[in-house]
Amino acid sequence: MKEVPILVLDFGSQYTQLIARKLRESGVYTEVVPYRESIEDIKARKPQGIILSGGPASVYAEDAYKPDDGIWDLGLPILGVCYGMQLITQHFGGSVIAADHHEYGKAKLRIENNSKIFQNISDDSIVWMSHGDKAERIPEGFEVIGTSENSPYAAIADESRNIYAFQFHPEVHHSVDGTVMLKNFAKYICGCDSTWNMGSFAKEKIAAIKAQVGDRKVLCGVSGGVDSSVVAAMLNEALPKEQLICVFVDQGLLRKDEAEQVQDMFKLVGIPLITIDAKKEFMEALAGVTDPEQKRKAIGEKFIEVFDKEAKKHTDVSFLAQGTLYTDVIESVSVKGPSKTIKSHHNVGGLPDWMTFELVEPLREIFKDEVRKLGLELGLPKHMIGRHPFPGPGLAIRVMGEVNEEALRLLRESDAIMQEELKATGYYDKVWQAFTVLLNVQSVGVMGDNRTYDNTVCIRMVESVDGMTATFAHVPHDVLEGMSRRIINEIDGINRVVYDISSKPPATIEWE
Image (cartoon, rainbow, N blue to C red; front, side, top):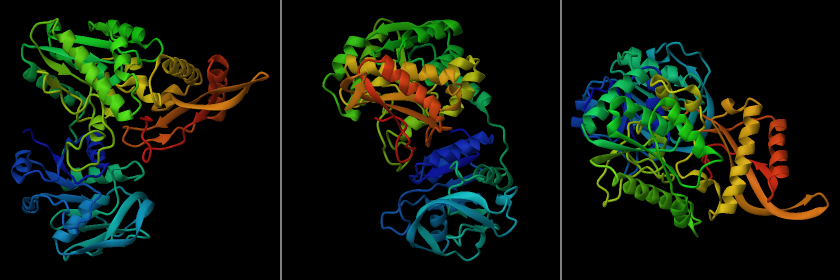
């Protein structure tokens, strides 16, 4: 195991990976491991500090998540966040009880002393609370270093032992100075250097790819999106051209003219690309399927079959490379701890037993914003890196209900118009992701003097940094009006356009 300056023990919070991302942004390499990680494995990483994440459980419950007791004897600085704070409180002799009411939302942090962890933090800084339990009595040796209106123990510390605990979540975007607090913990309390960046990550992963692959061949699944394009660029950097086979599957679920655009992009960067027309196979696999999870699984299985068939045309193909990100992983399977499963992703969860490929997934532990920085580091053009995220299952999960050619026509045309208007008005680069969804809901309308009973399309636009949380984009009404007018006037079969004003959470970015 390599050395990891800051180790985060995951107790199940959906925000856990944000702690790692914030610290990486500050130049401190950070990894997340399950709360149950053995003390031997923790020691092997030689951390300079440990962070205990939040989580949905209660520390006083009979089956509460508890770390290896050995972490308390390492003599390392420890920071507890929410559930982590309550663990620290309980372990050192304080008490934790259920709060009279859940505290969820913004609070003003009043700093009570000149603690190193609050260096360069202004008083009344906004922090984000999300908890149902609270410390009733703090342990002996600890003092209050921060309070809020509803939390007399918003932050506590035993500075002689370098143990700190926050009731709030410094890692989320709403905690205005949260990144500074985390960096203070890493820099001033743990003594970490800010030396990690995407350049060092690229070198490390390219070396890892060479070591894993050796002289064998890799089949790289390409969608044209940012993630798979960056993976292809890394493999192209790491391996001789004869060892890399990039395959683009046109599964019939792409946006308008996208297949041609993808092929043109790969010509531009000089990476050979094999294009497979598999529209018929995918549409047959989706016939009659309406459940979102079944759609994802059917598409994932079909991708594997197509890749396996292509691999048999080449000799000595041992690996399948994918652009899996941590946001895919955390929403699919609880690989790092007790985090709740949200939905499955087509490229997560391993390969079927009958397939002999090993997976190459160099982006599995990083976020979308980090992938974009990595792509620029590898020399990919900005227009390629700046494309909006597009899901692996494609338009299938933007059609509510069964996927068929007519539904895809309506979706493609409406999405193309929306994208044209977005770019023409200068808003394409101002939002994280934008797309249309076919609701498969008909409503009455009037076109000319005639009554219509046609489809409704929803426009979805969000602002985000990493895809873990998102807010709907506040796009001017005249921009939305222009999209709506064109979609209804130019596409036969649509008579109503709506705008999605849901944020994540509670909604997800994609509808399925």
